[in-house]
Image (cartoon, rainbow, N blue to C red; front, side):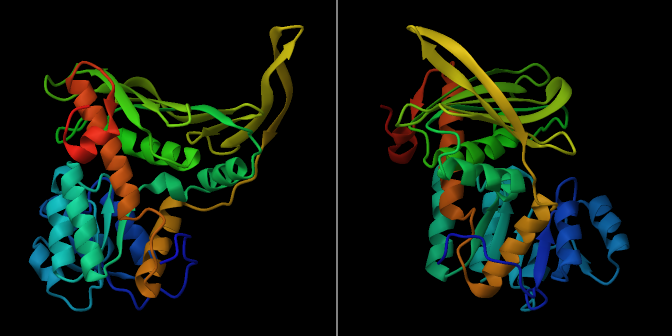
Length: 347
């Protein structure tokens, strides 16, 4: 299977059911409906189901997943239920012979994610995870700039994902917000980190962390820093990439000029480090909704039997970092090597 995103094609031959049509799922419902692929909407929460059923009266609606899985016209199931249900719902869909798109994270345990990846592989199913930022035109362009050496050797990357709400009760902020940043940073660096340390605090609910800071160490010395919070006075979604030639900033909260390249750095003069500041460039980005690109990519992969950009292996890399971060959090912020997640044996 190819690792490159498949180009959009005629999608009407692919029948899709969306499981979970609430806060995030309703956006997937909209996109797959516009792509003429939507066949079913399914949600046990009756108000969410009825709200979408009114918008799409020609689409079948049910609160029972079995109805969807029994329909031979449904080739793929899109899962946007709470994170704690992802493993079970994805497993049921794969066992029913369906291709699966599941929102992040793939599961809440690394070994459960491994099971899903193996199940999909054994059945020849397409398994894709919704790491939506990897489909953002800014990230696509930034990845290409790094590959071509425009920024020089990468030194460090940091990402802030901050907002006031939406506070979760099913998972903490690390599992809710950080998967986006873990997937993007790993993609830009070109490898998974070897060590993770996370610290944070619970302020609203005693057993659910609201704020975390995660530090990633990569094999070649590159470091990543991820600050996530749903208890913050303003919204910020900013990624900063620092190379030894140039620097880049991706700010996803502004409408225009989301990606800037700074021709800045440090030069040594007479043995002293001196700042170098020249040009600032705003890059042109494709006018496209990342979720639309993501949905088109999934449909093309199902139709053409191609490997998704954010496939099961990609999801496992993110899941491994999340689990290591959770262990570090529980141990007071001490670094956790990713080998511990793979083997189950503390280093």
